[in-house]
Amino acid sequence: MHSDPPESSKPTMIGELKRRKVVRTAGAYLLVSWVLLQVAGALEDALELPSSFDGYVVAALAIGFPVALVIAWIFDLTGKGIQRTPTTTGASRALPKLAVPMLFLGSLLGGGGIAAYWFFTTEENVAVDSVFSTEFDSIAVLPLTDLSNAQEQNNLGLAISDELRNVLSRVQGIGVASRPSSLRFSGDDKPDAPTIAEELGVSHILEGSMQQVAGTLRVNVQLIAADTDTQVMSRAFNLPFSVDNILTIQDDIATEVVESLGRELGQSAEEALRFLAASGTDNLEAYEAYIHGRRLFFNRNRATDPEDFDNITNELERATRIDPEFGHAWAALAMQYYTSIAWGSDQATYTEKAREAANRALSLDENLALAHAVLGVSATLPDGRIDRTAAINGLTRAIDLDPIEPTLLSWRGQHWIELGFFEQGIRDLEETIALTIVNGVANFWVINAFFLMGEIEKAQERLPEGTQNNRRFRILRAIALDDSGNPDAVRRALLEGMGDDPLLVEVADALTTDPYDHDSGYEAVLELAANDDALTRLVNRPLVLYVFKQYEKLPDEPPLSGRLTWWYSAHEDFLASAERYEYFDQLGLSDYWFKNEFPPRCTLDESEQGFSCR
Image 1: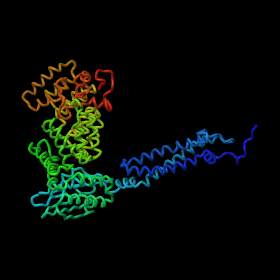
Image 2: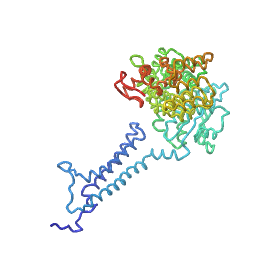
Image 3: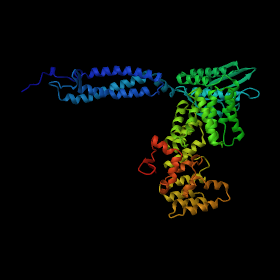
Image 4: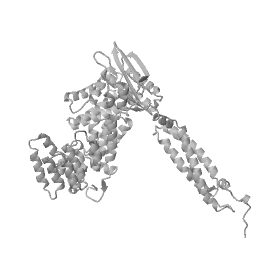
């Protein structure tokens, strides 16, 4: 019979933790964690890793802490390898049970200590927190007012503002209003700074003027705090008129604005300034041609005279002729060539011209975002089909280089939606709209994507004012409702408040009547539209062709969201139609899916095409 050892000789919790080397392990783990956090911070700066990198390291270390303690409690590292720690003679049976809450408490303290150390000692976290807790968090850069008698420097004022906006957008903790929104406030008749700031949702306004007098460039700028309507910074420049001095002015203004806001330029902003100089030009005539062409490009729209559109190309080509080493001009010219295709230029000719210009730009500077985008969207597979993988990769690389260029996000969003990744596309397009305040094309794609996802109310909310009774949008909504199998809702969506509109009545019958002769129905709507050009265009659009099951008439290259007709899913015969899968192939969609991943609506199977989409 064994007697219990004296009370004083029984193992205690603390003694057992020491014997099992749990305390030693905890100390060593915290020390190693401290070293790893220093290394993580250094790697983040040196390798330009995302600012969240050291946060992930902290999370991993905090999660690993209790694991290390449990392993230390159970196992010992001996000369014979890792062995289970033996139980001490006389140990209370309560010890293992008590060890669990003790280890849990230690884990909370240790893991929390790691996280607290990182949070309170990381400058970036302190800075980010202060950004959103102070008024110094956003700025609108307005175009510099041209005070010259002939208004000859208006383009230059816009260019300086653009580059300042580009640099400031890369500064940690400063939000910058987009170019289109800022451009609305130019000239002498613009509202006061507080009014502009309230409309744009910013805390500061950077504005100023410029004038060329006898070969001297005079620039005056001031940074205004909107809440007090007072100057935070004011600076005047009087320098000989040259490209080098224009770049110097931009550099000095950016630096002083950032310092006035209590920030530091940081590596990415400094690189943006160097990037502008490295890919720029020292030829004033080339620079002026470039900024004039770029301004025309930004202001283009469908009402633009064809001759004005040609002037964009002419000015950018002139800039590259004057200075063949002007990287920015080559990149802008590549974008213009590619855009020209949508305006009626020969596709084969201008695709080749766009790629040549983009390659020339990248030979001068591999960080020119527009050039990467053009090479991506213009790439084709060996058989001439669109290379969607190259398009997504090229646009993603371009967006990484220039995340505030809305055209790049809009293009990638449209590609995502065509590929069937609706949510990813909507994210890009929503960011496009945020950067540009209003973007009709991006919003139109978002509306169509919501309808395709069955998010009918969200789509309705995005409809432009005055379009609630638009026939086209009513038909879109009806098609989306038809997918839900509610014929009464379909008829209400089409006819409520529209009287006896004969076209919509026929569409309602085509979607809700069974049986229904779709060929005869389509002939009927063609007769209705015979003397109405606008109605003729509508009944020949993909969504109406879909309603009346005229699948063979659906075009391979319909305009804008007409391509999305191929994702409608209410007609069972359409889902399996040969035309639908031919489209997926011809537009390079299925090639992307097989190389990368299939969208949520498609799955691999044993069919002839190797997949099916609902």
